[in-house]
Figure: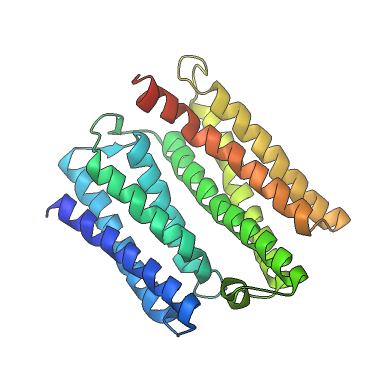
Length: 266
């Protein structure tokens, strides 16, 4: 099976799903079911591309674009699974184009180094929990931004079509904290498992990743405690959710961007 062809089909599927969501918002037509079905098709072909690529090159690559593409797939799958019983499908307007772009970049700039051929269970647990945490908190950050926009437009009494298509503010806030709570669980597992296999923080260029991830963990933990004890919501929740996610973004991809694309270090 040609991995490039499979990847192209996935990119086209993600792009088509994005167009259908935009069309639904602009024309108020019911294309929700079709857009989700096509997005599922994109996720299936994206997964197939990952499997075929891993078989062809004897390992899973964790270079910058490959890792970003893998995270994008996790985010899409979490969104699609969540859309079965939660009103999160409109987030696809940002997530599906992002997945298409990241997969396209992976196809254009293939990287065969940084492959993980075999590993022990702590490393596997760390990688999967890290990706799951980042994916869930990415969706939470997008939801927080939509929540801020929704709150601002409702206060101005001139809501746009996207805002009118979203669930009520209270439902959006509840969903936001559910995403944060689940993401925090996986982030905790990621940090604990990371300490098991890390031998030398400085030699492995993991100091900044560990420190930033721990700060993000403190922020998200404090946010959940504040929600439970003090009823934090609204702009407070939105601000700290975005700050926590930006720290994770820098932790997960900051060093890869500098080392692999700017300094070209392996």
